Length: 187
Image (cartoon, rainbow, N blue to C red; front, side, top):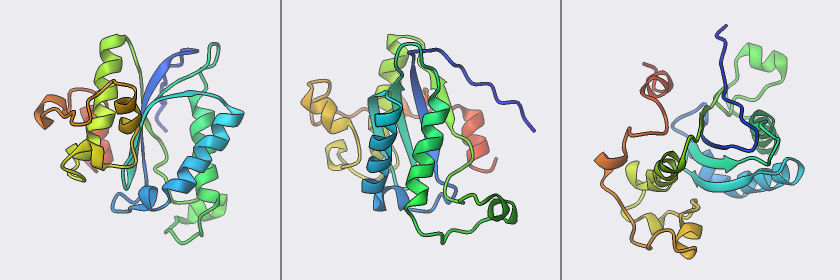
């Protein structure tokens, strides 16, 4: 079994990509209220600041800042995934191993995590998160995607409502590594 190394810096900011196991599903937007409820409940027990978040049909990107002295983002993701899954009917396909362990087959087992290194890294990931609905062709204008902290950023004056960059400026520049994308896409 691979030995995954995670950068754990207390009080740091992290970028995440979390995927559903079924990459053709629209579960996350179909059940976005349940996802929001799960996140709220976990934040009440294990606080963190949401810097940015976008929910797409089958995956999501977000950036969190953890409290000083706390580097345990893994416990938060485990709790969010569990809280979301436990309220859904068990109708997804599951392996025998998952059935034996009483695990759900909703989420990909792991997630992509990146420690934000500096202000430039922060801004690039912040932009990447908000650009994603346009990148994937879900909308022609970012303001039309309802499942994003983009609207909060516009209200705070971070972006104008018509903010947009060309796809070639953002795609692959940061966020998920080429190796992660290859693995995620079966390569």
